[in-house]
Length: 524
Image (tube, rainbow, N blue to C red; front, top):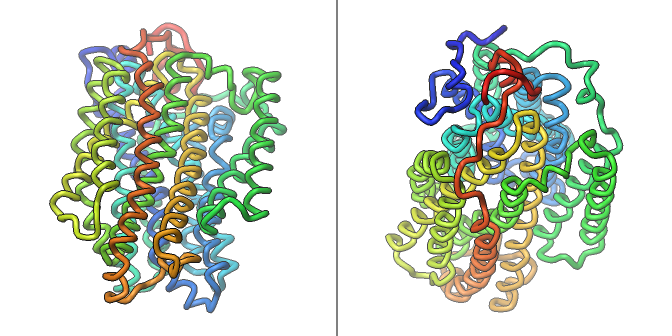
């Protein structure tokens, strides 16, 4: 079914200086955000239910951990192939297919009769989830044009924001009030609604792609890059879980993943634009700097996002539900910053917004780096709000800047590359934060060696060790602070104003929005 929204004018397609976010773009954003919220929320909502699931299936934590890891691996491994899949089959078809896969695998996960079945269905869930956000991002990026990229990308900050904050809260409510299976059963109804909206509102896929060069799968590149990303992601997950990089399986995984990604770089350089992801795009100033800044920011950001809930649970003794509510000021700050950052980026460029966002993030993180076991709630809430402002003013402008100096035909490859970089950065940041925190805790509170701190502590025992734990968390926050500060170097070199518009690709902007082929005639 084709879209029924009003046909956009040439100015709308181009994102002209006076045009805002018209009804068509808002409708696309709503569809993409609905799908993305499901996939991102599912990465965090299950965390609070792992102990309950383990008890239900009489499975050890080493087995149940794969309920989380399996989703992560499926999510990470499929991301590099999103650009090719959207070009080969059409972005609308891939997006709807990913929604269907995610909804069906969610229903299967909720009905699982054993831990093994649940893990297998979680891998399928991750595969669908890994396609939803990048392909949705591709669709609305092509529909917006470079002049509205900042504003339209601000809509994609919503699922990232909601997923990290509301996941523990929603998961805690479901587990405490009904069955853990409803963590998965809530997805199919939302999926059905989103599929219906996507079928009606998303731009139709252009016909005649099967014989094009873009339809040929770079199989060698697929094996090298997807395998490398999955190995590094899993290796980092193991390092975080084991509290260090010294274990042989962890080192082997990281080494294998690094070699595979290195081999892909050699392969992609030789293959050029026919590679799964064209690394030659990194030579474009805006995209190359955006990718580098995104990598460093992702390492620091994901480290902070791991440390914050742990601080509240371990040092302050908050429950998962209380922790989610205590983190709400961060969400509020990001909600305030997202639309402002998008609009300013469209007018003045990412170099004006991103450094300011990083400085705000540094200020918020610095408070937690110095927080003790009894620091006032008002001070910590204000710091979270400032940190949220920084997050909202950083990632969205970086996504917008990545697209601004490239032609529309490059958008699928840009989307795959940017999401792959962010996934790798997130994996490194998460593991690094866990390893540094575990080392600091072991050094300051030796009796909590081996990760005992992550289990429940009696109130009296926590009160005795809380000051030392707070200092340990401070050490980890300082490392994240230093990494975020390093991101200022490439951020200051980002383009200072939106790039000139590129020629669009076909006379009708609606098909171009779905496909990624260049067209003639209208600006984009």
